[in-house]
Amino acid sequence: MESPRAVLLPQFVMLELTNACDLACRQCPYHGEGVVKRRPIGVMSEPMWQAAIAEIHSWDRDVVLQPWGMGEPIMAPSLWQVVAAAKRSSRVEVGFYSNGNQWRGPDVEAALTSGLDWVTFSIDGIRREVFEHYRVGASLDRVLGSLKALATARRASRKTKPEIRINMVQYPELHDHADEFVAAMREYADSVMVSRYRKAGDRRFSPIALPRIPCHQLETIMAIGWDGRVGQCCEDQQGEVLVGWFPRQSLRDIWYGEPMQRLRRFHAAGRWSELPLCAECDAWTGSLERVSERNGMRVRERTATTVYEFQKEAGA
Image (cartoon, rainbow, N blue to C red; front, side):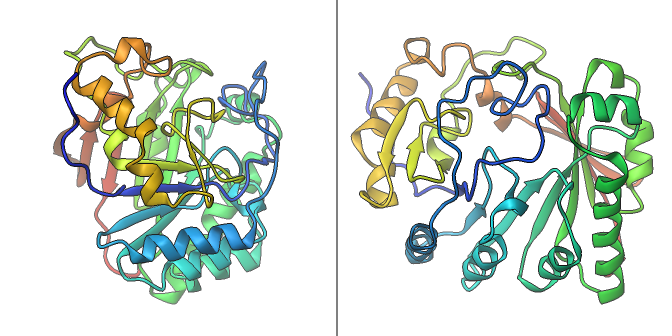
């Protein structure tokens, strides 16, 4: 079997501070309708996240640290401590996704003062009946209020960070909603991502068949669960394909350990169909992109998403 080429330390590290969530979104692969959880709900301990950040700071490379996983990061008591601690290194970029349902005044202030680089609010359109059908437990008014509060506070502070991003899953009921949604969000966000709808558990991203190549995630992304388990990739929401346990092993040792190297060897040899998580997954297509300019926006088209980036003046 062909040996994998030399691999750098991960560019992206997902540090799941908690897998608890206040919502039960119907198509969530962890909290969704009919999904059986195979991991207990919990919160990462302070010694664990401190150890992870300390090791990441020791790496001789730029890293994007995402303190979230299968839960709502705002529900993790340590969130803003983690952001501030990670930002003590200029080589670490920090950002996370949030459902926007739990933000309060202190969170808005912390987002502006902790060093946070970006936050992505998950807002599945502005058609209330569709939004509240799929995002069970969420209030569209509350979520939009969180978005607007952060945008207003950032504008008043004349800061450009955190960058405000929005992700909308384009459910069948929203097939004609993308342009309307992008236009409505332009006042508050720096970019909007429209994501292709897929059912919970579905790992197919691309609408077209493409010649298969080894997956970039095995060489770029490390996903650390709240209890220290490290799964194969970010598509392993249940942590079923374990490649190591932190901090029993260092992140470096896990990354270069035999379980990860075996996965890379199988991909290098084109034997992905023999790997349970990979056989029916095309997350590897996420590395493909087409970029264009449209109506004052930079548009990045990928197999699973279309990202609309707005050009704004500093402090806008």
